[in-house]
Length: 91
Image (cartoon, rainbow, N blue to C red; front, side, top):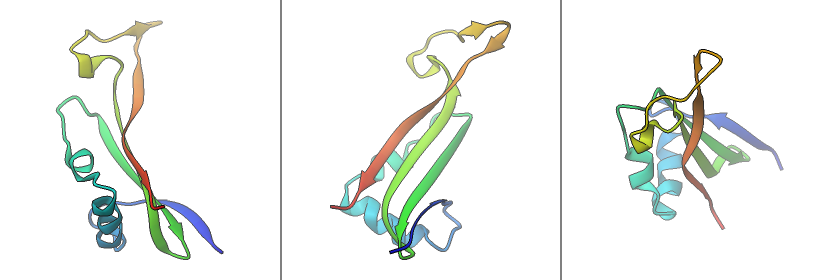
């Protein structure tokens, strides 16, 4: 059984299939959420035999920015975090 993880965008041929999984797991609000402080957003799909069975969405943001805090700086560099916004796997 072939298992893979791939990054998916809304333009991807897998998006419609993945959206069905997202709906089954009632995660649509977390996939659709956008915020000005997100520096980037990434969606990955877990595939079994080419069929989506799960997903993970994470965003990159300045550490603490989602809580209205000033940027955290270490050695003159602003710190960033990858924050998981949505995750799901079909039973």
